[in-house]
Length: 296
Image (cartoon, rainbow, N blue to C red):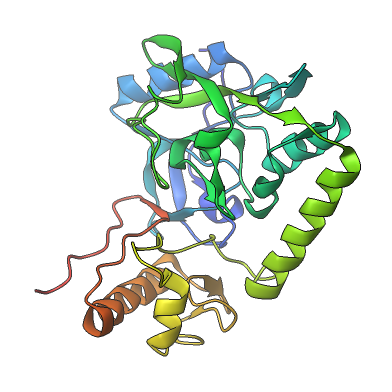
């Protein structure tokens, strides 16, 4: 074993919402070998492997997570550029990737300024914003399992709206993006515009895990739908549906994951009642948490 395994690591220290109990096992692999070793350890212990990234888009059970939680670091968080290709470790932050792309005069990644996550997390959920997503810029990803590693292209990854075909135990170690020539000034201007738009419409200065639900088909997005249900400012314990954007949940005052889940249950119920739509969660639930089925 080349990677250290910690036990009982508090996930509230890693999640952007600031909730979550201890992980049964936790590791910070810095190389492909360490990642493979960690995944073999998980398989041997009968544990699911969960990658935490920057801790966004994740809601972990208050009582803890019976899994191996991974945070990719070292070589697995590095970024390099060759021509119009940007190569990033699965743990590389979108902010660093965007900074490097701008410095190299490569455009196409600007939309990711609105996504506080990592390259690997972007692949896992085909992350997107402002009409763009990973599928449009990804050429291939190196996926590691307990049994080995292999490159998969965008088609093989099964990318669709906020979804990939990656199975449990498959972890994105490296990502390659194909970008295009632009000027640092043009990239900076686009990013400034997108960030201003995001700050005006989303609670960027609050503790959230990002969007709660995927946008359903049709013109009415999840946020507008929940706003029309009168949910802005609705609270459960220390959690609150954002007064700024109803598709975000804020940790307003010592929230627990159960508080957040209760708000999700109520939001889905009201959306079904008023619009006949069953909202599908975007946030990943770990540790046995799940949304109960809506009554028919």
